[in-house]
Length: 194
Image 1: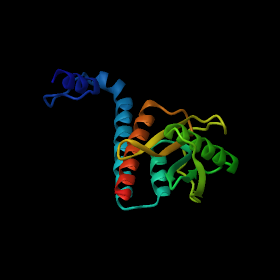
Image 2: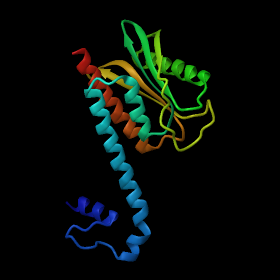
Image 3: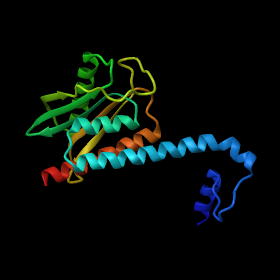
Image 4: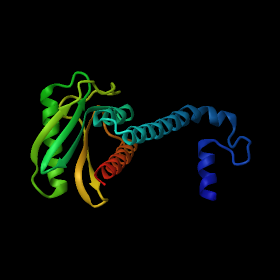
């Protein structure tokens, strides 16, 4: 109980309905705290939207665009093993050259091979013609940070990878969101193959 109350006081909430901090102290901290709360709410809302998309069997491209509404991305891809082939669905932000998306897909396949501990054979690639939502940040091509998160089948077998290249540095909150999105994608794949 004390930990909860301490967190409420840090955010400027009262556990008894009154003000927990003096108005002058709240004025200094309130905009940053409100922005942090809005960002957290936005991430939760987008996870909910991603869950709805996946439950409706929407195309994978729509899921990638949903993820990119939360985390500013240059490239997003899902590479899945199917019949021994690494099938890929990718999306890119406006202005990302073809060479960068091909390099990202090659890197995603390499990450999948390492996660599966077996070589993978290139399969068909679908590139979404609709660009990802514009991100806030500009990283030069070839130097964007990346994350490769495994997609699990039956909670044990790596059956794919969610691969992203950020439009800016990937923060801890971005990685937490991407991990939750990969969990959603894994569950959706489990339902499809069950």
